[in-house]
Structures are given as C-alpha cells and as structure tokens.
Length: 297
Ligand SMILES: [Cu+2]
Image 1 (cartoon, rainbow, N blue to C red):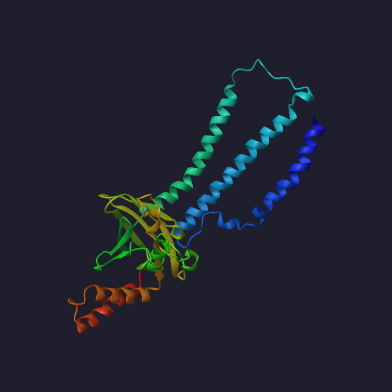
Image 2: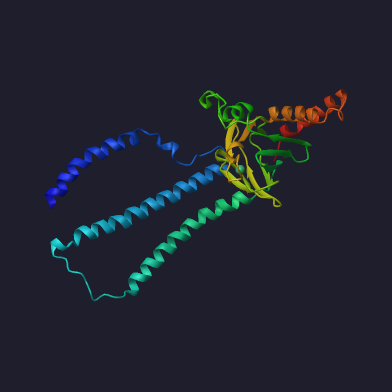
C-alpha cells in the first residue's frame, strides 16, 4: 500500500512541478491589490496585507496542528479513540476566546481606516459624478464646469460587430474616454456620487476608492493623489448597469495645480464663451489661476 502511494507520488510530483513552472514565473505582484497613489489607498493596502498575514498565520497553526494530530495519532501507531469524552468547557472557552480576541485586534486598524475613508473635512475641490447608461457626467461644483465622459471613439468603433478593426491595434481599448476627469495632485478631492437611471459604481483602483452611484441618493468619497504622481489613472463602472456596462470606463487625469488652473480657465471659457467677452475672460483667468496655487494651511 505504502509502495503504491510512493509510486503515485513519484509519477505525480514531476507533473505537478511542470504544471507549476509558469505560476512560478508569473508576476505575483500583479495578483495582489494595488498600493495606489493616495494616502487612503496605502492605508487600505497596509490593512489588507496585515489581515492577509494574520490569516496565513492562523492557517499555518490550524492546519499544522491538524496534520500533526493526523500523523501522530494514526491507527497504525496504536492510537485508540477516546470514546468517553463528550464535552469540555475548557476547550470551548479556548476556541471562543482566542478567535474573539483576534477579531477585536483586527477591528482596531480596520475601524481606523474606515473612519478616515468617511472623513471629508478639509475638502479643497468637490466634483459631482453622475452615472448614466452608459457614460459619466462630471460637474465641478461652484465652477460652472460640467461635461460628459464617454468611451473613446477609437474603442467604440472597434467594438462594433464586424467593424473589421483589430481591438489589439487600439491603444487602451475599452479603457479610454473622450473627456477624462481632470484633477490636481496633492489636493483633497471630494466626489459626490449619484446616478440618473440605474445603479452604477465609480471605481479607480489606484485611488483605493469604489462607491455606488445610486439614483436619488448622494454617496461620498474622497481622494488626494500624492504630489508628483501626476498621470492617467483608469477605472471602470463596477456595478452591472445594463447592456453597455463594460463600455463606460473611468479615466482620471492628474495634473499639477498650475496645469489644473489653466485647464479650468480654458474649460470655463469654452463652456460659456458668450457670457465672458475676451477682456473679461482675461481678467478672470489670473484669479482662477491664483486659487489653487495659494498656500494652504
Ligand atoms: Cu455600469
């Protein structure tokens, strides 16, 4: 019997190793949650890793003990089952108190992070995000700037049935939009989320943030992208919202405060050209540009 097991193991082990070879070469960091580019995303990642290693330790102890017991007290070694034991108060207390203690220890850092996620004090910029089937609308509150953000035309053309366009030839296929959300770095941005038709969810993994956009309801989230982390960040609608759910990506362009001020002034002029004659627009521009660069406490 033992020889049979050894033969089977001898045959299976090389096969298992061969099957695992590509796994060993894989980029494991890509499987994990992203660390992101905001203080919150780093907190969430740290929390995730802490709880992960707690779980690993618990797994090692529980399975280690179990396997050791199976081997040590096997029948072939003369182990006899204890058929008289029906109840042990001591054991029940131990297996209740230890897990409760571990849960309390886990709850402390988790509660701290959850509170930080809800803390929108000190917001510097508020943007209302409205989900539609199947696009996003961004309203810069108090700035009079508002626009829609839809799937980029190159992706939209390629996705049509029998378009003849190879999706692989389209850069950022299904992940690009016509008008990205533009925000400044190192600025606390509050996002107010709602929807016009059905439930959507606004998700940017690098910001560690995902929340439902619900019709008739306003949800809130915030992010503050680290200084020096300018660039394009991509996300998705994360709530199945209908036929084209997969075709309403989120793209956030993070720029410097100066670039943001210039972009906002340009956008305001483009939004309302008749209300702002040329000289007035020129006068207004420096005021707008001065706002985000002003020193903050
Ligand atoms: Cu959706």
